[in-house]
Structures are given as C-alpha cells and as structure tokens.
Image (cartoon, rainbow, N blue to C red):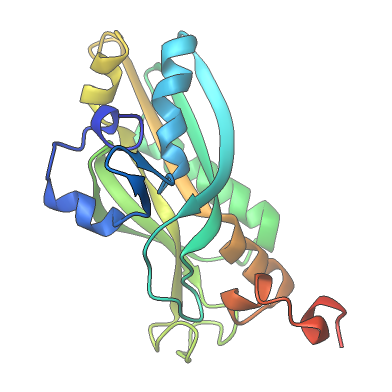
Length: 202
C-alpha cells in the first residue's frame, strides 16, 4: 500500500511498469523508491512538514554504467501553505550549486510520476565530458539525477489535509549518482563489485 496504492498508483496502472519490482510474495516486495516513506510522515506530522529521508531501493533494471538494480535514494518533502514549484526549483538549484560549485548547470524536463503533479526530472551536465557527449551520458551531455514535482492533491487528501490550504513539493535522487559526480567515478557498478583496485584507490 505505501509503495504504490497510497502514492496514487491505481491497481494495474501502466505507470507501475517503470517500477518493475522484486516481489518476495504476492503482496510483499522490496521497495522501489524512498517516496514510500512520504505518506507515513504525512500521517504522523501536521504541516509545516520539512524533512529529508532515504534508504536502499530495488528495481528490476538492466545494469549499465549509470543504472543498477540496487541503489540508495534520498527524498525531500515540504508541505505548507503557499508552497510553489518555484520554491522546489530554487531549493534544488541552491543545494547542487553548494555541492558542485556555482558553475553547475541543471535542466528540468516535464515527466510523469503518479505522486506529483506537475512532475519533472532534473539533470546536470555530464561530469565526464562536461556536456560534450560521451559514453556515460549516451551522447546527450546530461545525466539525469532524479525526479521531482508538486505533491499530488490525492496524496494530501489521503492524509486528511485541505488541498485548498496546503501544497507541497517532493524530490528524489540516487545517492550513488551523486557520489559518482562528487568523486569522478564513471561507472555505478564500481560501488558494489568489490574490486580491490577501486576500493584501495590503486
């Protein structure tokens, strides 16, 4: 329920295909996103709500230079009166400029997530080629870091909040990709392959 139903995923909706999961039984699965914590927080706290949370997540993904079936995700959530998409964009821009420097370029593109509306993905210029296009960014010059958007009104209604009074934003991104950029690592698989040359810095 917390992973899909309470996050505005209708039963058998095609959006669940992107979250193809590791099921342990018919109704137990390894969580696919840390967004599953969002409803728990909103059930326990009344606005204003400002929090960061995260953990390990699992998806049935094809493993590539920048995709893995197991990774670590961090989510941010803000719910209060008068919250706008501009607040979300400004927060992410300020955070990543502090993390990677004032020259950091970020791109937002419209996307779809059942739990946010409107939704967007956010990307940064590739840290291997600096936007020129390479194998890591598949020639685009950009690396997608995560998704974000305004908390869907249905989520707020699920937890008993007045959608005429309260709005909110949420974002989520993979810590593994953040570490890749921070430390100049060009292959996400290196974090989990136990290659001693990599682990010892040889």
